[in-house]
Amino acid sequence: THAKKDSTGICFIGERRFSDFLARYLPARPGEIRALDGTRLGSHHGLMYYTLGQRKGLGLGGRPQAEELPWYVVGKNLDSNTLLVAQGHDHPAMFSRSLRCKAFNWIAGRAPSLPLLCGAKTRYRQVDQPCRVSALGDDLLVDFDQPQRAVTPGQSVVLYADDVCLGGGIIESTTP
Image 1: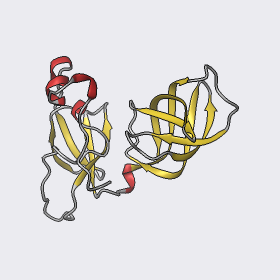
Image 2: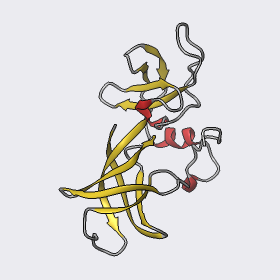
Image 3: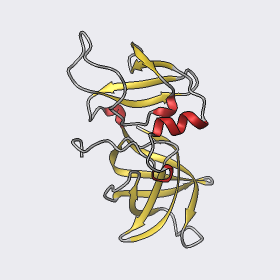
């Protein structure tokens, strides 16, 4: 899937640029783009315009003493308003072994017996990823069999048992 075109649209806003839609409702707050080692690489237009795993629109071309690999968004520091980037589609910082989910909605109206072995999707059209789901207070903890790329807080996780949708919730945080 690394060769597929990036998906940056939102279906409910119709045919318009994502950045124009966000700018209309949220004030942009420019900040710094930094590599994981803290090196300042450039500036961003506002953290809201970027998503984990994004490659396009960073404005980071080749860099002296850097590998000739593309840069990807691997994190956001909301407190310092910093966009964190790393080089390479498969950089380790892009992967999460587990996620914490809040506001989970079980289709059946109640949770099945936990822990539960099932499949999970964190991205559109993703193949179900084997995982183990357990309770963590009022939240759910989803531990993946294999680390998952670009799992993004604020987006959704949806659980499946074969072809049956069990429910979904909002990703609160991830663990490398």
